[in-house]
Image 1 (tube, helix red, strand yellow):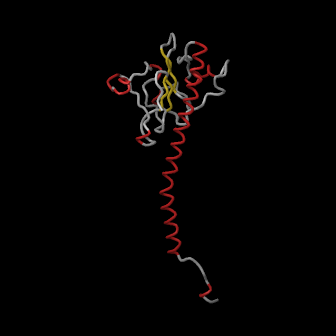
Image 2 (cartoon, one colour; image 1 turned 120 degrees about the vertical axis):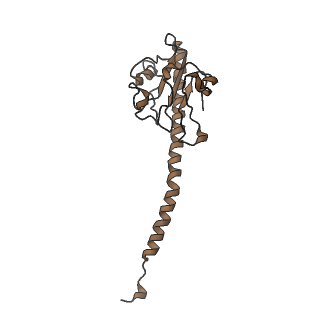
Image 3 (cartoon, helix red, strand yellow; image 1 turned 60 degrees about the vertical axis):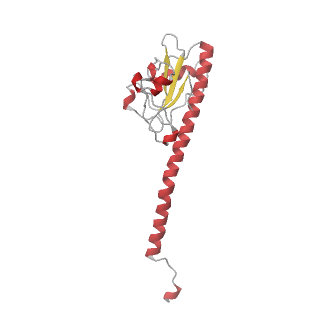
Length: 184
């Protein structure tokens, strides 16, 4: 057999090819993961908007929002599905994982919902855990109503953290919808 007729890659050529592929994958993977997070943020915002519309329709018919005292927490939005179907199903929070900081009644997968005052629920707050997958809010059932001073003043006694996409998709903070003011 004549060596001039053999056409094969050398070990060096194969190693260079594998190295180039590894470099390209290293560049593409973070961009892919970032795109996944951005799409989840968009979905969480859309789901919160959908639930907000259902809450407003419920409040129009009942002169108050659903009670936020129902335990377990996932039951709080069930009045939106029955007996009148404002929603066919309550969407789940794509960012919610089991969070030990949220207390024993926080159920995996649900948006946090609170309404106040208890005797006549005239305002509500609804949150998604956001890309950091932690509930970075003070107990939402104590939500007192929107006030810039509450959000911006750490001395107010409330620890609300809003998600800010300008800090990247892993920034601390939750995605909020409240009856007094809706964040985008």
